[in-house]
Length: 600
Image 1 (cartoon, rainbow, N blue to C red):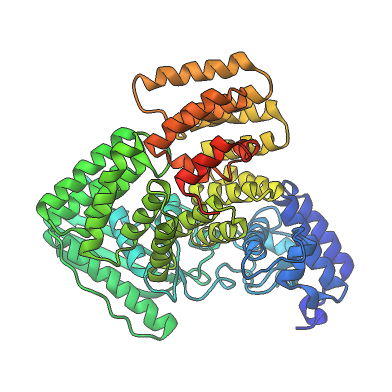
Image 2: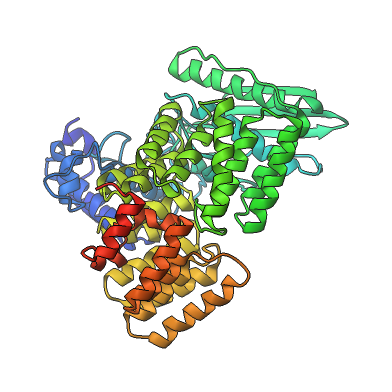
């Protein structure tokens, strides 16, 4: 398309005026990178150079990549283009709803298009909607879908977890179809019980199809109604009602999952779908759903309570693969996948046992493969085994954001930051609203020394999840790397006070105090950790990091050795932890790295 046709009769002066107005809005004024991106693509188009708007050129000229930049490995341009599209749409839905010039960035292109609304700004003031030619969904892949949380319409105990279980089952079924882009459960749950328009949800999640449904239980019967929607037009592409006895709950779930997947595959991909049939005792399924719901609380008590529910499910249904995987996830969460709430050497062997049991029953069960990979990496320190698990999981379910996220952490531990960022970006594309996914993407940018990119991600994270501890945790590290100790201390304090990070923020706080010479405050953090040890497990690695900041290397190595004996997950990243970089030449440090087995 020529620049003339792209500009649709809009003059360069009008365009520059419109860009200035957009960049001054709250949507862009706090985002330097998106502002540079928009200004650059518009300027290039006005100057007749839209043919230069390629991923490689943009990566170098807008995002300061060097000449070795490879867009097929580093997806920053694609990710930021998606964010730019979303921000433009938000702007035109709110502050810019009456603007005389519309700027769009079509999906799959970096050359913007400009047009004037079909109705005048004055006429538009009387309307609540966007102009008729500006709609959500058209720029997103035609094979993309989000399954919104099903609405439970009956006052029945545990109805909430059943509706979430239905949503999760359909997502899991669809995610195995490699030709579909399926948004993960964590992102769609943010839209539970909201009144946000379908079009806006589709835009936020970057999908071209929405599936929604309702559940009604009454007198031993269950009625489930589903509908597949094109968010651009609100047109219902397909709808179906299912009415069964409540004892057939699991069969209904499977039937709906298969039917929706079949309809989507046939309608969008023009392929036939073949689904496996399974049958699970409804009581076992109910216990399993209670376990999943309880685990999401992500506390020490909740992990053990969830494990009891999963064990109950297995006592009813001995070959229940998902329940064994649930058990593996609980023990992994307690000792390896996050915060080490229990001593890893005590708790993780149980998680490994349950993961292996699940895979004996079904060696293609993606969650079991992924959790096994997590424990192989962070407990067994088996890098080849972990990578094999992550690769296998993604070969079966390319839409699995957890597998992408953990694979990025695998690459991070090796110092392979380009690959780590790429996997983190892939997780973001599948799960754009997940706080864990956004936190990890920011962290990988930080580890790679890309501080502006990291900071930008964290600003976005705090927009979607205000007060999230992980955002402050990451920001604390950015401030430390810039020598801004007061700001770092404040960020780590906020992370600890926000809750959710358990003892981890105290590691950053104690280290920051020590590095800026506040020895008394650093030792007070150590005293606090000693008190916490009386009622629960605290990783020796946390103590080691603070003693490193205090330059007490003997104490530091003493606690690192304890961490090694406990098989602390934090040792997985020992070679790439910025705090320990100064010790790379120390023979004691080199010996520890060798014993952990981190590949060269």
